[in-house]
Amino acid sequence: MSLPVLDVRGLAYAYPGGHQALFGVDLHVHAGERVALLGPNGAGKTTFALHLNGILTPGRGSVTVSGLPVTGDSLLEVRRRVGIVFQDPDDQLFMTTVHDDVAFGPANLGVRGAELDARVAEALRAVGVEDLAGRAPHHLSFGQRRRVAIATVLAMRPEILVLDEPSSNLDPTSRRELADILRSLDVTVLMVTHDLPYAVELCERSVVLSEGTIVADGPTRAVLADAELMARHRLELPVGFSI
Image 1 (spheres, rainbow, N blue to C red):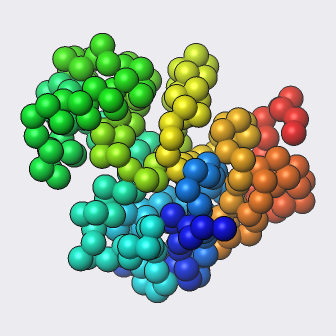
Image 2: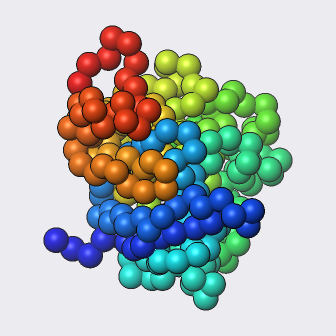
């Protein structure tokens, strides 16, 4: 098998107040995989995700993206390769128009003119909101803002797309439409989610993080069908949903 596009080895992290959030996490993700990162509240999922493009720095261990260590000297390129879409799109949208928000990242890399416009159009088309380019983000619906937030990351042409709770606060139609978009993207996906049916729908593989350690890693349906594992780590499928 080829080298992993994401290679995490022995990752440990404690917050300044002393809370140990991660204890020696190992995770390897290969190009083209769609992996769900599952776990109860407080498991360390968001802390883990924030290490993938250098927002947090490991206390111990390492993170490598396509052979490039996630360290100070390489952070600009790492952040191009690993795009994180936060749970609240308003954390990523701050310009006066959708076009300018999506253009912001590539422009900071030096992309200009027709190439920049092409990047913006390509990213907006990928998430089905090219007609919103001239709109103010704060006038959009929540679902539209989430799509635009994804477009801001896609405009960087990342190798890995990290999504933090992508289905949260979406109505059923927006949830389904977003699933169709995510399936269509030619990019490696790591999806942090509490939405277990969404994990089944979109991710062939699931990893369970609990109390800062990985306790399961396998095919999504097999992981979620393990009743003892699910109960032990406070994971529960919705009533009426069967694997």
